[in-house]
Length: 430
Image 1 (cartoon, helix red, strand yellow):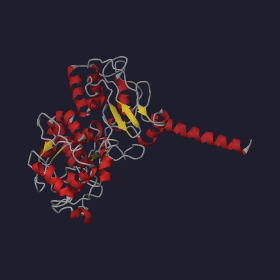
Image 2: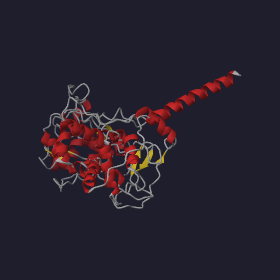
Image 3: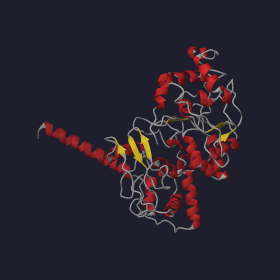
Image 4: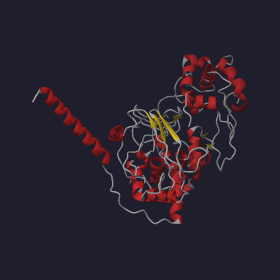
């Protein structure tokens, strides 16, 4: 046998072993498709509807202007667009032919009825922590919906990300099925909050950074990150310098999740949709449990680092005769105040605002260019908002304005460049 042939056989053997390992890693902890779902009942359907709200399932599985849960909405990713499927009980395009066990496997193992691997834009790395009982309740609710004969749209992914083999390798590296794992050192309320935030609420799907292959450090990572393609920054839920609430009262956290606004802040951007479609509908005990869990989060290393010092360049912009100051006076002072003090309950203060001073100015750029409103909720049906300035201000002017705001009235943050504005304004439509 020649040396070349021996080398090829060795490489083939290594490849076969790696393929077997990837296959095993994709099948580990997978339950057999057994166990019938409980008989449907009004109580079970109502519970499933509530849990589907907690998971904000309709947010992705309903195309704007389309039938509820009929799918078709695109989720943009750096690798292409993934389209949410039809969840109505239509037998050809939806869940009509599915069993409760198959639906459970989709949530717990990320595998479709026909065995295909699902893309993690469907956040099964979080949903894997959902209990079988809750999965059965959600399935009962979805089966109670009117069937909609809407075909599913094919994903438009780049090669090789459109291949099941590539997805299998990704899952072997970054996904492992899990179970609800209550912390025995914590009480029932804290554990309920952890279950909602880590599992059904899939908060880390946004509030975590992702590597080049789109994976987070793990389902418990809530340290903040730039949302791919959308270019909004989902701030850290563990750091009080960003969106951490360790120093908030329970009442303020609950109010924010229930209405979108509180005395300590307001939600904007993608989080508005979460409050509107999900958290405003949750019960007071569940919101309190989430607040309890979120208040207990600790940033790695704590929040003991000093506030960022203003650079020499940004300090200079605190003068009142700079281009940024003049732009602020012309476009912003009427609402936010001459000294960034805002109007309580109406227009947020910009002075000493942690939202203003976050390291990345992405959200500020979006707010100036696109405007925005907190969500319209039952508790705040007519929120005050901000008009867009994308057609009024150039990239240079937005940069000058934000540099002024980030270095004035006690704010100490780095300036914003026109390049930053160009980078963050490039957003794929949803």
